[in-house]
Amino acid sequence: MDDRDNRHGLTQWHSTTIIGVKRGDTTVIAGDGQVSMGNTVMKPNARKVRRIGEGEKVVAGFAGATADAFTLFERLEKKLEQHNGQLLRAAVELTKDWRTDKYLRNLEALMIVADKENLLVLTGNGDVLEPDGGIAAIGSGGNYALSAAKALIDYEDDPEAIARKAMAVAADVCVFTNGNVTLETV
Image (tube, rainbow, N blue to C red; front, side):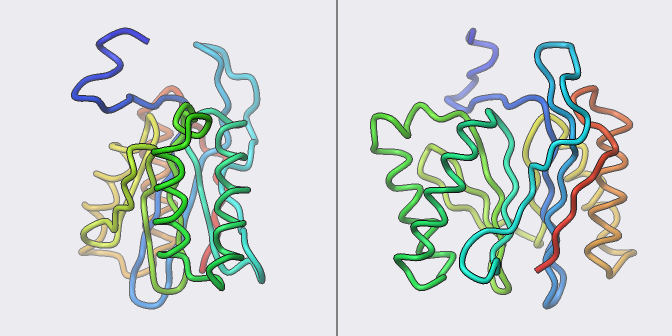
């Protein structure tokens, strides 16, 4: 990784788009299915969004290295078990470990997680961010999807419609994002 990929201490993530949209009592997380290695599409239909935890009441999506994301999914599930399904508390505990543990510190992924009450972005820098306006996006197409969703939010009430339209915009603009969308609602 050269300095252009690590401006201001923030890693520039590539190869996916994940968006979370919260409107009223409904939260949606959507992600594309493209797995890229360099400039080559290795798989067009991966599932980067899934339900986790007891009763599958939490939805999570990841951007970054797949093996690292699966490690984080497993760790988050364990934290949810330890904290009786309380997503916010589990997320804080996971990010503490992620930031301080020598092994976890090297994981290259970002996550968007949600339950009925929370929509959060989790990072290896120890961040647990609740997005302003109920919209969060990560990955190489994240800024495209975020911009599209912000433009739609005043005209569309359905979070699923917002997420699908925002993902379509990202797929049209970002070469590391495709139109094979996985969407989960909580």
